[in-house]
Amino acid sequence: DHARWGGGQMGNKSQARINKLEKAKARELAQKMG
Image 1 (cartoon, helix red, strand yellow):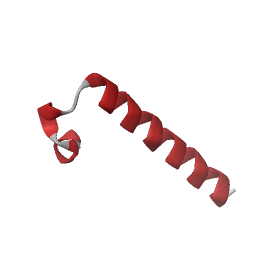
Image 2 (spheres, helix red, strand yellow; image 1 turned 45 degrees about the vertical axis):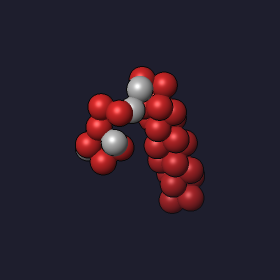
Image 3 (cartoon, helix red, strand yellow; image 1 turned 135 degrees about the horizontal axis):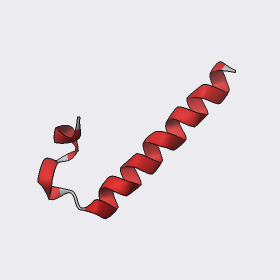
Image 4 (tube, helix red, strand yellow; image 1 turned 90 degrees about the horizontal axis):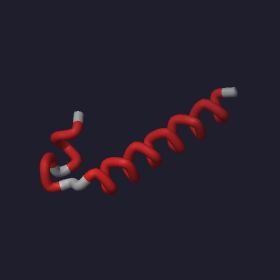
């Protein structure tokens, strides 16, 4: 749901950074779950 991230205001760089953050978070969660 990209609308929550400010919609069209966000540039590609911001989107990429968010994607990286989300991936890192998901990986961290996966490691905790074991």
